[in-house]
Amino acid sequence: MTEHTQNAAQHEDNKLIAERRAKLANLREQGNAFPNDFRRDATAAELQEKYGDKTKEELESMGIQVAIAGRMMLDRKAFKVVQDMTGRIQIYASKDVQKDTKHWDLGDIVGVRGTLSKSGKGDLYVTMDEYVLLTKSLRPLPEKHKGLTDTEARYRHRYVDLMMNEDSRRVFFARSKIINVMRQYFTERDFMEVETPMLQVIPGGATARPFITHHNALDIDMYLRIAPELFLKRLVVGGFERVFEINRNFRNEGLSTRHNPEFTMVEFYQAFADYNDLMDLTENMLRRITEEVLGNPTVTNTRVLKDGTEETVEYDFGKPFERLTVVDAILRHNPEVTREQLADKAQATDLAKQLGIQVKDIWGLGKIQVEIFEETAEHRLMQPTFIIDYPKEVSPLARCKDSDPFVTERFELFVGGREIANGFSELNDAEDQAERFRAQVAEKDAGDDEAMFYDEDYVMALEYGLPPTAGEGIGIDRLAMLLTDSPSIRDVILFPAMRPEHKAAQESSDDA
Image 1 (cartoon, rainbow, N blue to C red):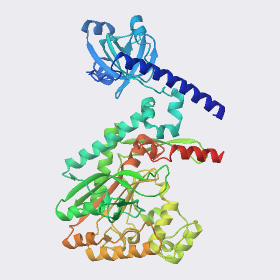
Image 2 (image 1 turned 30 degrees about the horizontal axis):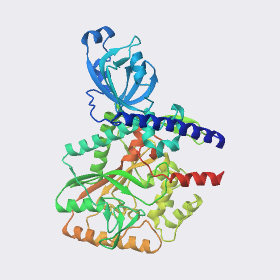
Image 3 (image 1 turned 90 degrees about the vertical axis):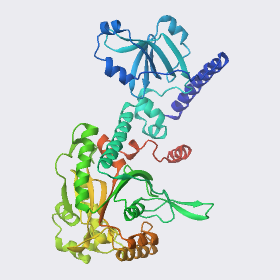
Image 4 (image 1 turned 180 degrees about the horizontal axis):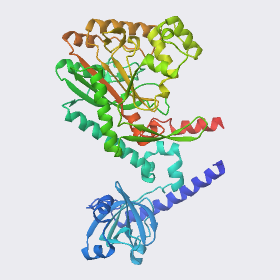
């Protein structure tokens, strides 16, 4: 859109807003411009479900009186369309009613009482026997095309997006259902839902850069949590043997189609279990979620290929999920690489450098292996796959494998090349945990902003005794992306992080 066209559109909007403000001023003169005494007794979806299959003649004989309310989205003179949270329904205005409601505009919120009827085309409608303007909309609704396709506006002004875009509403209804099914799944299995601090003196439970704030009364710096893990495991120490938290986390990292600085996860911990138990639980739970949210265990997504073309891919949650070690995944997707290369630090370093990976001196063999996996194999994991046995070096909170102390009893779940979940058998050796924290502090001192702090109180909790426990985190945003076929994490977060509008406009102007 040219600057001239933008200015013309803005001028027209300002003119329409002025006209609507004048109508509101007139309403104020007549009395209460924002009445709050109308009560509806039915929604659009309820009426469609209960009476949608009735004939016109059957409805006439029933004489059903209803009260509906919602936002006026279309105005075809005699027939207007009202939208509520559940969907849309028509209202019918006689010529006298049309004259009486000529001050109504698209976007106004209205209430209507009348008889439920059906048109010759088979559409339900409510006669406007009684009607009231409940809220005057001062801003005109966007044009349908713009309202559905202007991505920046959709994210920045989500309320408009939800008014205009049925697909957006569908996504967020699905997200809500995912969380509800998940919560029900855990409570059925005697997991206790808990809440842990978002403001923490020591950020722990993950390797990530935290947000820092300051508590004035205590005069100390505090951190927005990057994960609830260490607090949840304290609860297991205290005797709550099965706990879960649907939690908001904050990480001071970059923005992308998969990353938002605040995001939602579910973390859960089960005493007297190991990572194999949690893989079984995760597979079973995700199968149930897909079946209840989508109606079947098959998830269909559209993928955009490098050449710009699209392909449809199906992810089958009904089949057993494959389980591969980090090393085996690398070997499968890099047939020219040998197991011996990956087992030798010098050879693995050379391989990583050939792949363009900037190897740091402080990295050990385990870190190098994981970097090679992420560069060459991760994005190729299409069907649900557990990658297991991560090196100890990159798993500071996971229990080492008895048969091979170089690796831990840890897994990550990948679907469509995206990490969905991370879990492991918990490290419950207090002395080993203290030593790993010290190693993390050394990495932080060497310049790693994402390395962990030393959490003395958590070590003390382990000294009281953590039973054999397994824990896991599942990214709800990424799971919602997968199940709703959404290409960006911003599509499944109601109010994603956005650059301030004036700053974005300035940068756009600078680029031009």
